[in-house]
Length: 562
Image (cartoon, one colour):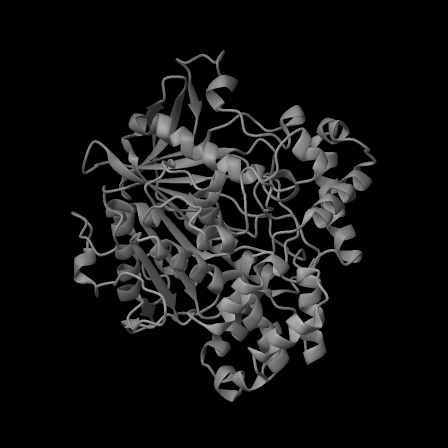
């Protein structure tokens, strides 16, 4: 198969880079034992990098068979008959969760790691020379549109933190396994199981952090894209808990796809019944794992053929179930229905370009694209929407940006959109409604209730979705901009350690106090609301998302499910 979309190419490139990083890890020493009381795990010591790594530690029972589409079961209950004196192998990654595949983004040559429903595992990075007995913990929730993704490499950030931080990566159920909701599942199971998996992992950390040198009172949840949306979801969970299992939140380029109504959600369930030849939920739970995997991929194809989702939508994504997620994100953060903790959020300048159909060439194409994306027909709405994105915005200045040369060098198919104003208009809409305005929603909501809030706008590097992580999690000098890599790592390590990106961290090579001060966020058009990041500067700028566009989406949030 070939890569026909940016998403495919970008995913392939990311996986290749991460695989190269993992294979480049230095020789190791086997031996460190993590004793959790109910079980022991043998990890790997990376002496030259300064950390121990324990991979594939389960935090919940395998969600298979009758546990499908149910809340996760704590692993301690599942392992109650295990020999506690025999160390289990934690020297290799666990299997990744079964991946989804939308028809518009499925053409790929990537060789993914082994997939399984038995995937509710975490990786734990602990420093060889911890700077205290009870270290802060950063919990990374991966992205992937809520249908793909898995634990990736955080070895470089762990090394950079230099004994001041523990990093934990967590996996969760995806797509049809993690976010299928229907009337039947609501009666005998749970929707948004993926979010409940994430919460189960956080609760596991609360119970077990002291065993690996962590402080359960100093947990920061952190993720990008769907991982950033997941951070918001954990803040929203159960209507916003007063005492959540985390003290701070970092929602990077947070992404929420349209929250679907009951008709679409029940249609997803019916599509899965059809592809499994089942008529009941119990039949779905009894279906063998390989057959269910095939059926879910066929269901994505059926949904696309029948026009049930559009380009840029991952279809089987979070829903408002009235239990775990009680209301749409715009409403939750506007109404204060979320856990109040210090918040950091960011996004890049070109968030939508990688998720926009390269075949869009006319104004009619733009409207049709988003009619399918949102599953709505509303002429008045689209007239107002398109007026906010005049084609003149995307003139030669936009297309002459030097970044385009870099993008086209990696993704040659993008050459065809140069000068295509309707395509750029569609990219702007997707980037705003899914990412940029989502960041604005969480920042204004958090700062509006008096919580310390920091917001960053990244207009550096290749500018596309996820670019900030290349500076935060990448290998030294992997971006060609070491000063910016250090600055970004400093801000984030400081936030993880102190719940404030401006406080110094003892032992880190370039303390955050040496970087430009990152001011607290303020909305309402105030000067100095956001830290603006370019290749050469870190400046205080007004919030570019404090705009009529984001307010338009917030006004119409019930119509478009945001």
